[in-house]
Amino acid sequence: MAYETVIVEIDEGIATITLNRPEVLNALNSQVFIELGEAAEELSGDESVRVVIITGGDKVFAAGADIKQMASATAVDVSTNVRPSLRTFNFIENMHKPVIAAIAGYALGGGCELTLVADVRIAADNAQLGLPEIKLGILPGGGGTQRLPRLIGAAKAKELIYSGDFISAEEALRIGLVNKVVPADQLLIEAKKMAQKFAARGAVAIQMAKTCINEGLQMDLDRGLQYEHKCFSLLFATEDQKEGMKAFLEKRKPNFQGR
View 1 (cartoon, rainbow, N blue to C red):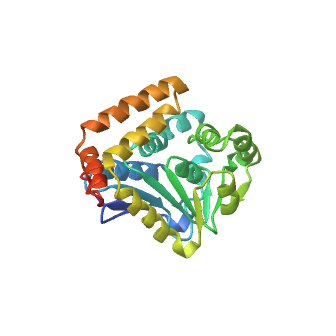
View 2 (cartoon, helix red, strand yellow):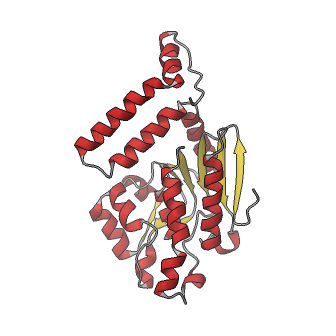
View 3 (cartoon, rainbow, N blue to C red):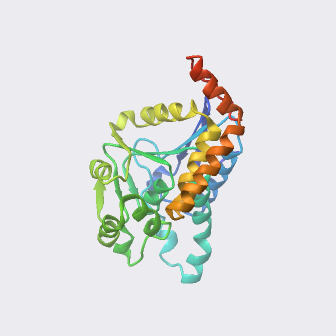
């Protein structure tokens, strides 16, 4: 499918979605959210795709929402228009494939919130992340007040949200907001290396592990452990489990088929 605001490329089981509004620093508007969601759904249903990378390229990830579109909005407008972003974020967060955010330059507001729905975040050393909505008299409305505290803890999340300050890639790494910091010219190379590592693992097991983690975060420990046990048991009905253990005993690399 052809898109205007995102570019989709697939290479050896790894799909890369690149935000494509460079003239406005990849500002996120309703069209971006709709097309991003459609691309994610298309890739989710593509059995040849094992891992998805979301990036804005090597200059900027996304400098936030399109303020021109928002400035004259009413409460009713916002309630209606925010639905595509929430639907897209929720879908990406829970899609049955690993998602890596490759972050260069600014990842602010909705751009930062988009990185939060990825499973792993790799930042270029020139990245700056933040939720500056408070400076506009609003709050993060794309999941920032919910996902950020779960990721880095409530106290640090409150500091970032209340101040609206930007933080560097190194500070983001220190507080656990990103997993890794790399030189800017190595960002996509490193993201693809990690994607290749994930792609070589059992796709069904990764899907189950992702579901266990995401669902378990909404449960108390006892229910989470019960859910994990159920998923663990179900994996013993898969071909990948048989292949993985057979390969281990035969001292060779497994050839997982995602079944």
